Length: 178
Image (cartoon, rainbow, N blue to C red; front, side):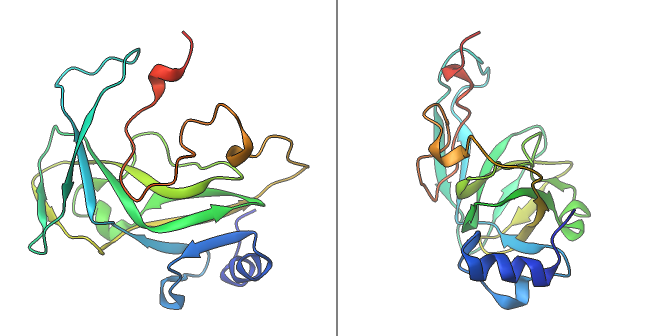
């Protein structure tokens, strides 16, 4: 079941959901609009290795915007810091962003109960497009969880993305054993 705007507000009042900054005008019927933060990142190497740490280079989006190019993976970040303690958050792109040919995640649209951080975006585009810090980029949708939670993400010893940062985070796949 997807939470309605009223249920999202009730979750915020209870402390089950935190969105910072929270702007009432960004609350939709059953979602909350998030915005592109000021940082983008790109991998330094052309060939990435799933078993190795792949370093990234950060860039601050200038006021005049930044042009994304096809065939390039950009890591972005939401302007909003979020915490979700009793629901499963899903991040989806906004239709207006999709109509510009921008995808905001390759596979990682679902968060875990207990996720407490900014959202890293896996941005790609179909043709060159200029983006701006602060522009609406996606929407959070919250699903109810049925049953008791044993393993909250923010309490897992092996959680790879628990370090609070307002910059995009590179893949930590290399920390897995395979």
